[in-house]
Every structure is written in C-alpha cells, then in structure tokens.
Image 1 (cartoon, one colour):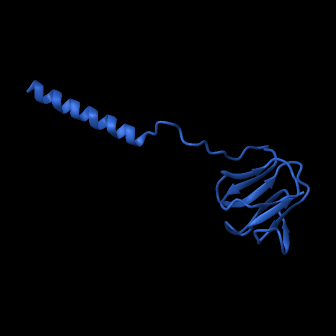
Image 2: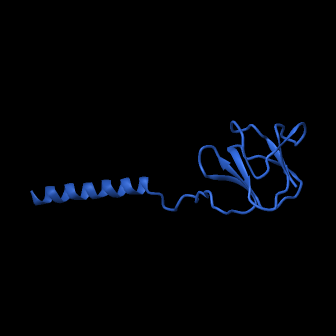
Image 3: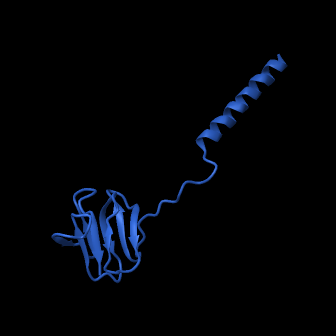
Length: 115
C-alpha cells in the first residue's frame, strides 16, 4: 500500500511540474509600455487602452508610417505640427494630429509627418 501511495504521489508531482513548465514561461514576456504622465515625444496608443504602440522622440519632417494598431496620439513636447495622411506616402489632404488627437478606427491614418 505504501509503495502504491508513493507511486501516485510521484505521478502527481510529475504532472504538476509538467503543467507548471508548460504554463509558466522560462523568460518573462516583453514588457508592455503604458501611458505615463507626463511623457516625452510623439506617442501613439492602442484603441481603448493606454498601451503604447509607437513613439517618435523628436520632430524631423520625415514621412513615417502610423503604427497599424494606433487609434490616438499625443504630442507631449516639441511637436509644433503633426500632419496625418490617409495614404502611405504622406500625399493628399493632411489632417492636423497636434497635441491630443484620436481617429475612428485602426488604419484610418496610414502615414504622418512631424515638424
């Protein structure tokens, strides 16, 4: 009886260790960056959350893609003009995304230029 109990206990221990090894990763997942007040630069955020999906430290006038998951942005400091475009190459009509700006859905703006 004692031998049978020891085998059951060993089997349960193996099952527990296997479960933990599968459910708990060996290394921590990449840290998710969230809203900080105040922050710096031009920061793009995900819809309905405060998760940061893109960032530009300083304005440079270069046409850049808007992060695909972004639905709002805040120009925290040093951004006099941020123009958003519905095209991937900063052509066509521009909308000002200065200071705090949101848009109706992901992919609404495809590119921007910060000056």
